[in-house]
Image (cartoon, rainbow, N blue to C red; front, side, top):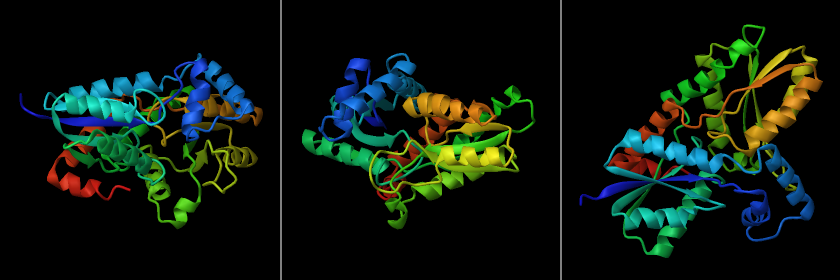
Amino acid sequence: MKPKTGVLLMAYGAAKSLDDVPAYLADIRHGRPADPALIKEIRARYEVMGGKSPLPELTARQGRALQAALGPSFEVGMGMRHSAPRIADALDELLRGGCDAVVGLPLTPFASTLSTGAYFAKLDEAAAGLGASARIRRASSFHDHPRLIAAYADRARAQLPKFGVRFPRVLFTAHSLPSRIEKEGDAYPRQLKETAALVAKALELEQWDFAYQSQGRTGEEWLGPDAGMVLDGMAKDGVKAVLISPIGFVSEHLETLYDDDVLYRGQAEKLGMRFERSAALNDHPGFIDALADTVHAASSEKGTNRASHSY
């Protein structure tokens, strides 16, 4: 049987039920149990989503779409950092299936030591634990891929008919990270702002904003501006309609379905602003095409060299 190239989609993970929330939070906290108050709060947020996150199923859908795009010479699997199926288990399955090379592909277009770096560290750890002889390749970031930009613009454009004005103020958002990464030269903030500018250009926007959301609960400083503060500023400036475009996320999950759809929607409505949100990319054909191109680049010798500098 001709060897295949494996593709390991790597996502953050999620609790699959309300009962799974404590173990999920403990995994994120490196085994330390979460405070009961935090568990109660996250359980309440999961209840808003129907008791579970759609992330695992959406990742599976993305995997099936990518498999169809890549064809039979590739084998696509998926692994999570903080929940099953684990990255190590997914890698083991790909290797047992006869893959002689595996491309690690984090499900984010943006490179960062704290996000893609953590995924690749998990992949390296898994490969070492399995004694893998297959070549492990790291996919590069693809934040400015034309098909990705077009997909983000398409998702935003689909919401415009809901507004009484031609163009609402668009607020692009992404998950915040500790601000120390900027001083360390991390690519994440720069890539996000480049993507936002490219999407704004595709939408022919005259005015738009960018902000961070979903800050972690640590004592250190996090990247800003904060999306809630930007919404307050918009209201003071007389903005009457806002569209949040969460370009930092490629799948619907807690940060979009609760932080955006509940917290920011509620804030905007209290401020007297019409609020809508662009859907996450999920399995948008343009996003899948961008993923496929990224895999092809990483599976070539040239792609291998690029990938070694991806974080």
